[in-house]
Structures are given as structure tokens and as C-alpha cells.
Image 1: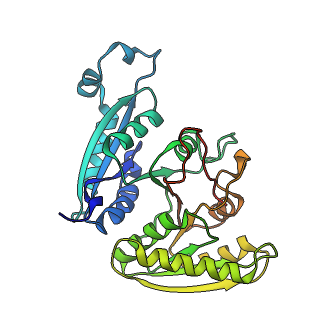
Image 2 (image 1 turned 180 degrees about the vertical axis):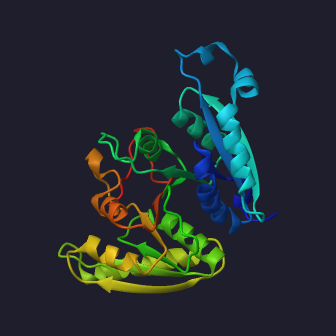
Image 3 (image 1 turned 135 degrees about the vertical axis):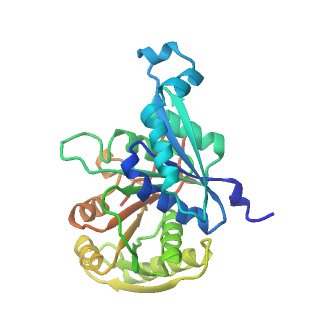
Length: 294
């Protein structure tokens, strides 16, 4: 038998066929380093007050799958040749419930979803569906910004500030770097609230997480900046890298801090590929609480 993670798929939820290639590529990177598999999921929502509620799930899938089946077909077509990929249509009361059902049924190792920026104002930080998945998904979660996909990757930027979410961030950074023979650049900022010794520990811990993450060893380098302009330092560095991976760190109470001020600001000011990583083993699903991005 190989790695135990082989039987636990990387789940990728896709609601738009135009997003399939970008998300399946990232899921494929995560699966490849453990010789695992990717399972693509598309959800058909059957709300209680809709006409669909009169039909069985089998009937809906057989006769009304339409766009959802197109999504699966497109996603499997663009999947990498060296990764095993399966697809499934799920009927559920909502997209979120359907995705969470798939996570539970497959014991998914991770979930990859896409996020697309919206111009309209809303109370949702990344959109209602993504916000709920961040709160409730019991496995590692990767949120990738749609539409800003690097055509080639020579360098991955991994800003770190400690915390349990560095582990999944390091895992996806290493998986992407391994596929592209790219380097990972660790960056941390010593502010007036964070002493230099702590920042050095952040870097050392992240380096250890990279070493322990699945996959071949990759080239790494690190830098520490000493000022209070964290966002500016990351944006300055972003132009020299193709992909930026953020992980969550500290717990907060305000909804608007769900993804934190630093990643949200950087996302809006860079055209690079951005992934947000959130660890599943710190989610308190019983209390429906989560650790936000910082």
C-alpha cells in the first residue's frame, strides 16, 4: 500500500465550466505529490420550494443535469494526464450543503474552490457560498482567485506570520513549485507589534512545514522586512513572483476580518495568482466557528 492519503481525494467544486482548468490544475498539483486522485463535484441545487423538489435525485441527474454535466465534462477534459480524476453530480438543498456532503462522503483530504471578485457591495466577504465553506468545511480548504492564473510558474511567494494555517499554505506552495520546478520565497515582516525573534521563528517554522509537506524537496529562500508596512512589502515582492499563497493565522471576532485586511488588500492590488489556505483541523464545526485570515 502507498501513502494513506491516496484514498482520500482532493475535492474540487466547480460551478462554471470556464473555471474548470484553473481549479483542476491546482487540485491536480495537490494530488500528484501523494499519488492521490482528484474528484470533481458539481452541485444541482434542489430548493424546497422549487419544482425540482417533486423529483427524485436520480431523475434530476438523469433528465435535468444540463449545465452541471457540462461542467463535469469540461473539467475532466482539461484534467492533467498524470492524475486520476473522477467526477460526480450531487443533488442537494444548496450548493454549500452539496459540497459539504461530498467532503464527508469521500473523507476528502482537501477542498479546492474558486473565488471571483465582484464589483457590487455585499455583506459577504468572498461571496456567500465561499464564506460558508470557510466556516464549515472540516478539511483543508483552498480558495483560488479566478481569472488570474499564471501561465507558467518560476517562483511562489509565501508570506508567513505563524499559526496552524501555514501547514496547508506550505503544502500547496510546495505542490505548485514541484510541478513547475519553481522556487518558494518565504517572506515575513517584523512590525512594531511583532519582535524580530518571533518573525525568525515564523520563517523557521514555515521552512519545516515545507520540508514535511508531501512531494520532492524544492528550492527555498527567505526574507525578513522590518517595518509596519506589511501590505506594501508583500505587494512590492509580489511583482517578482507568479503565485502568492496566504494562510490564516489568528482568531478574530469581526466578520469583516474573515479573510483579514492584509490578503484582501493584496488581492485587490496585484494581478498575480492568489490562493488562500485554511486548515481543516482547527475548525470547530460544533460551534460553527473558524479562524479568519490575517
